Image (cartoon, rainbow over all chains, first blue to last red):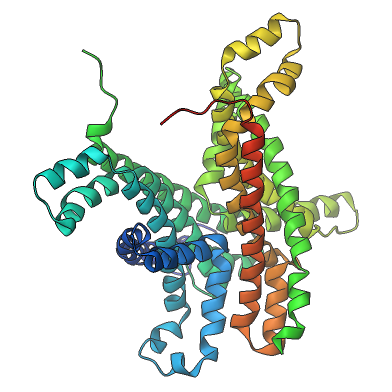
Length: 232
Length: 228
């Protein structure tokens, strides 16, 4: 019986897979976002070396498949002694750590480009107004440019988070038991592809819609001032 | 030494490109049909197309790939067993092309719908009033003009599609990823093997960006840009 009550029942283990998927998503999107903000600022920096190195980083990570990046870290890192001897090795030895690192670096590259674009698009009036009030560079960034750019980046950012959620499914290819991983395990045991992948698919569909709903609420709150207004 | 394996890995680019271009063709066909359904005004067709694009875009590509590949295999085996035919193996290349094409058809549906809507409707009306058939109006009037509007989103979809082809090694295709895995076991230089794959993908995406820039120029001829 597929929906049986025993602890090893597929639905039960799918629940564990869901937890791992959400864990991968939340950790890597949080660190990725924290990395992306300074990267986006550096991308727009007048320092040629700084902006070009961020350009190179985002170009490399956006131009190659996430799966290759993950395999590179998972299979490749162990070949350097200095990594095996470093403090990070206990994390990077595990598929979990490699997956988080790959997803974080990947999503940081995409989000940095989204943010950098919005920073460039800051209305010049906002900047001039802040300057005329005597704000210095950092205050201007912190109070005006970043809040304004982060708000306008919200719609594109929500797409990116949903894409990242879907992208975490490749973690199953380095042995992790996320939603897709559990479905593959059940398939390997039962040779029945329909129910496990269907259930995993439904979970992803629900997650996609839940994330989309949350972001719609956020847009309603933070982008209220950009909504089309009725003419009086 | 990895260097001896580089040509073998790089030769996987033909498999990768075949999958990519094949699924692009499927995706464009499905996308045009999907867009036509969404714009048809028929409630049933709109609902069908909306279901297609929602379901496909809500579930990861890898899950679709595994579900369709293994699922179709079982269905074919069962049918051939009940019919008393010999068991048929699905060709992974065909499976990869149809699955990735099926997935990106959903994204293309939105791309083409937006692009068709951006062409002034008076253009199509003029064609119809001259006695052109709707198909001819589409081919001669709407299509050439919608390309310009579709290009930015189309090129994004293509970039994501080309990177998605890395997944097809999971269903047994001898693509770049699969060849890198073989070189990895032979040389123990996993990082280097996947680095070669990265370089090939970067070359493909780099050339694509150039081609799209040319297409954009070609299809924007005679269009006056806004003076900013």
